[in-house]
Amino acid sequence: MSFPTNQFPLSNKTILKHLETLRCVRCSEALELTDNSLRCGGCGQRFPIADGIPLLLDTLDGTTQETAGHMEALFRFPSFYRFKHGLLKRLNKTDDLVMSDFLQQKKIVDVGCGPFSYGFDVTLPHSIVGLDLSPQFVRAMSQQDPENLYLVASAKKIPFADKAFDTAFLRFVIHHIPGDTAELLREVARVTRGHLIIFDHVRSDVPWQAKVQTTYWKTFDSGHHYNSMSEWDGLLKPYRVVEFRRTGKMFGNVCQIVLDLTAGSPS
Image 1 (cartoon, rainbow, N blue to C red):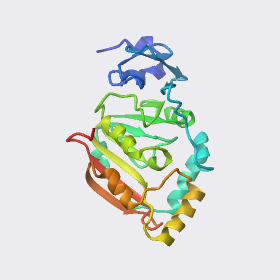
Image 2 (cartoon, helix red, strand yellow):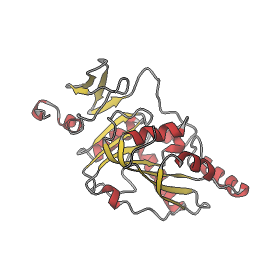
Image 3 (cartoon, one colour):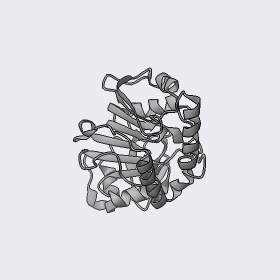
């Protein structure tokens, strides 16, 4: 279906590129674009578009940006978050995964996109959709990359149809999201037909190393929970893991994971 783009503001034209796969987070029906909102054709719910940014949250479930500590408060301040990210890269150098094969001309969803692009070449994908609960982060990304779509949405209720994307990213997001991580992975897998790439942390099984890591994380990160290897094994058991690598100076505290979803994802 084609749409006369000249009737919409410039900021809404990025929405039009993805309108056929955008879905209501309440009833999963298709959305219709108006001048200042997205309207569900099923339940009639309207989702506002503020300064060109779609706000696709289910107001009934009370989803908010829950913070676990002082560092997560930086989610309201993109420039400070960028500084923190640069500092951690210097403190904890990692041997990063080569991801060009998962990016080249692919449709990407970056779940928990943050306020700036890092970790992959943004010129390679066919398109990028970034979502984050922080309006400040989404606004910052929209200003940096107006050719792609960034929206306020929850990782637990992604406003897109099944298998809408080739590749999904969860980059240092999982430990910041409270609740059922298995449910979170199922939701991201639902919208992904190719590969799910996860960067996150691993808590050491050696007690003294775990104490050092915990101090480091409390000081520089303050997430909700950091998985041990046995916890990661349980979470990833339903999936086809094509790569799992540990890196980082803090006793291999960073894990880089690639899941192959081409054969389908767990229900």
